[in-house]
Image 1 (cartoon, helix red, strand yellow):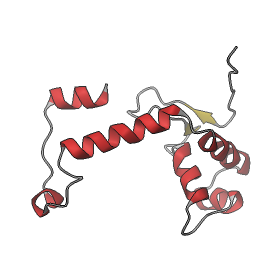
Image 2 (image 1 turned 180 degrees about the horizontal axis):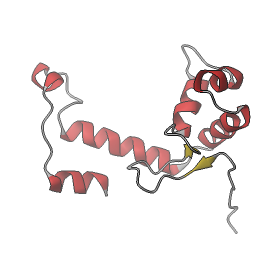
Image 3 (image 1 turned 60 degrees about the vertical axis):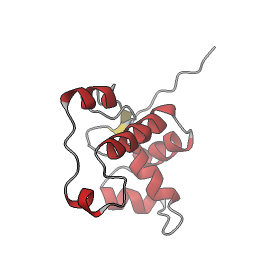
Image 4 (image 1 turned 90 degrees about the vertical axis):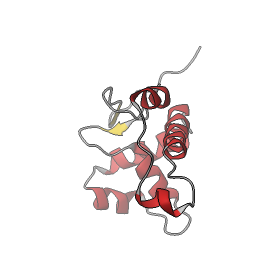
Length: 114
């Protein structure tokens, strides 16, 4: 039987293109907090992140635990972002696409966001 986790400070945002969880009442994705915490160049402590983002310390800790659990929705969000970047030419080093990405059709957007 699968264990269902209940979060007190994290929630889904049904109208968002992102499927991962956000800090309740904010537009801050839990992944952002987690990545800042594990950043190899300048890792941030939970206390620092709480101060940086004006969040309760427990919300930061919950976001870190969520990120540490490697939820599949974060991997799916990252894959979707990479597909959008590739489709619009923004993942290529070609100079003409750096300032002017390809405009995607409605059909391309629908395919990439599904």
